[in-house]
Length: 323
Ligand SMILES: Cc1cc2nc3c(=O)[nH]c(=O)nc-3n(C[C@H](O)[C@H](O)[C@H](O)COP(=O)(O)OP(=O)(O)OC[C@H]3O[C@@H](n4cnc5c(N)ncnc54)[C@H](O)[C@@H]3O)c2cc1C
Image 1 (cartoon, rainbow, N blue to C red):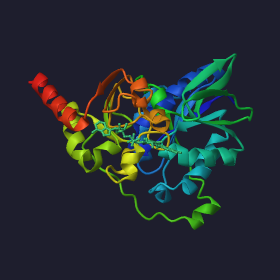
Image 2: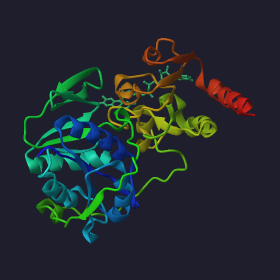
Image 3: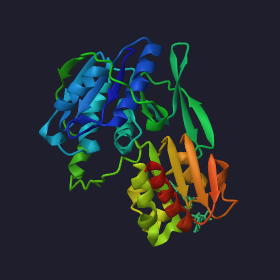
Image 4: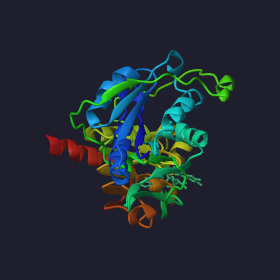
């Protein structure tokens, strides 16, 4: 048993981009332990998404579709993922909201050790070691797992998205294993998805984030900059807690982890919990009126200025440069 199982994330009959990072992990892990990797596509639209999954060089694509999997509930998914995972050395998913909800339950069912939110997989003489950020990213730990099956979640921003190789993996349909006992106590009520014309925060190349300083003018100031840059909008926790921005925009230790090419921190002090979510950004631009704000310690470009005057000027400048 030296194979790796990727638990894919499916939305509207498509593989979510999060899955591509888990595939990158699986390619390296399988090569290290001398096995192959397969992809499990489970849930509503799994059959459709399986066709897309065929192109990544997996040994096989396992498809589970059932009427009771229409709306995601971990209690309904975990038994099937665990039953299939039994035949693998490593079960991997991405540390998205889905992975964080599902994978610990899978690990518990398998009696498997679990390495969560890893940022690197290290090949060590045919064995796997995992690098994980700890203490809000201020330290890194290296762990290895000693149970026969290992469960791992990967940080999406730390693993480049796998590119399709053009292969045609075999597709196998697997029966739904039924819900867990706990599913009797859980009922699906509704799924209220926030629809936005902007790029998804965790996948955007440019992110414009604002802090508490923006107050009620959060959107009035940031939206024009995000529009002109085609950027996603993010926020600090203080801005979300104060109601200036919705909580699904929160970047940081208890929010989303982002690593765009370009990150704007506007009126954000740079608390370690915020840095934990954006420190991996390629280029960081900070605008803050306090020259001693900690954000300037991680910024590549810093502007000590009043954001209410600076951001509109920046927008005008970009518009003029674009013609
Ligand atoms: C367990 C835990 C988890 C947490 N998780 C997160 C998390 O996931 N994400 C997160 O962001 N925080 C998180 N926090 C909160 C974090 O510690 C900070 O409180 C928060 O990040 C501060 O947000 P802020 O920078 O917007 O606000 P502030 O700290 O109030 O900073 C506002 C900044 O705006 C500047 N400013 C004010 N007016 C202007 C102006 N006109 N022009 C320019 N600059 C101006 C100020 O100089 C200041 O630096 C967490 C805290 C805890 C304890």
